[in-house]
Image (cartoon, rainbow, N blue to C red):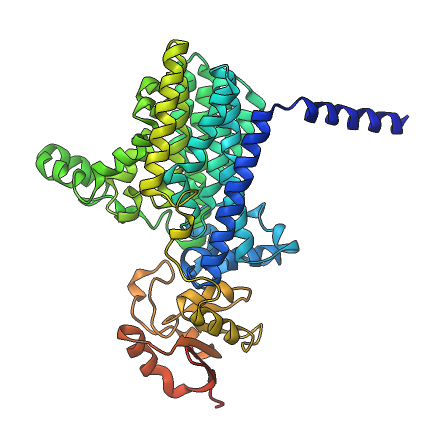
Length: 487
């Protein structure tokens, strides 16, 4: 009997595959090609020393430690990985390191997860606009979006999971597929403490659409997850609920509000400086501004966009960085909803406009898929990268080391690795900023130091201050590996 059941299951699967439309297979192919292309390019960038301690090496070390059932205390940044951000989703990534450990695993995972975000968008557009071809067009709009690809090429961030979870959550909310909705919301809340900025307005949209109970539960879960992440998990691990309060100008939230009333001219000048207005244009332009046709859906991204704009952290209001990814799904899905409110004839014209606008913006501000050969980076065959590779094998696997930032992601599978000049001089290390510039007692335990020959500036001064304790162990034309002298 079990054989018959298994056979029936196989037959059902074959039937489903046979009934899958050509458009669906086309979208799957687009997603796969995009993921493979971005993965290959990311790997080449990584092998060419284009990645760094921040923000690849620290995640590689943290996940590697988790995979060995050790506490993920990341010595590259001097704090527990979950104290830096409440990214508990990385617990699900650790098992991958039992099979394929390394930075390249994270980079490939990021590419494939973000590319997969096109699938819920395709299925929703196909259903809502009653056209698989239009659904395919919107999948392409996602895959070429500059903010989406900006995340892929900004080292590695757990935020990339939101490129799949948030589209699934919004689509499931709009189509009332509640099981998928709650799964997507739950997984999103595991990604980072600040995902509340998009989950909370998602719950508000549900409440406004008549799903009051589900909306209230969503809002409550978002606020609770954020508070638990910051004031329970992060505070217990590093002593403070967040290290990013300084990013709000004029002295924090209260200072910003006060300045808005007492000196609004200053606030207006601030909000229009450093390309902040251009940031909004770059977020909406790929959709030909048609996100505004469904403002109740686009509003899901409002807190993220406002937060990024208010921040004095330059990276947040530029689309090349991961802070903008989470805002894209709502803007794109709002475009689909808005276009669906128009007549069929006008729909096709506007979809063509959106597709053309997205391709145009991608050609200006993105590297995939059009400008893949123009992405500025050293390849894996670059002489400096090849020379660095020679040095890696010379370092004992359990040695305590301090290394140049671009070599760190290649050497992170150990309990103690530091980004030079740490721990000889504390720089961007640990939660206590009062220790910045001091020597750490950990410096006495460093066994090897890997540095480029062409050191200059502060790095050269830092090395000259400690070099007497080391001797040249190995060297080539580009790199020097130093070992501590015997006492």
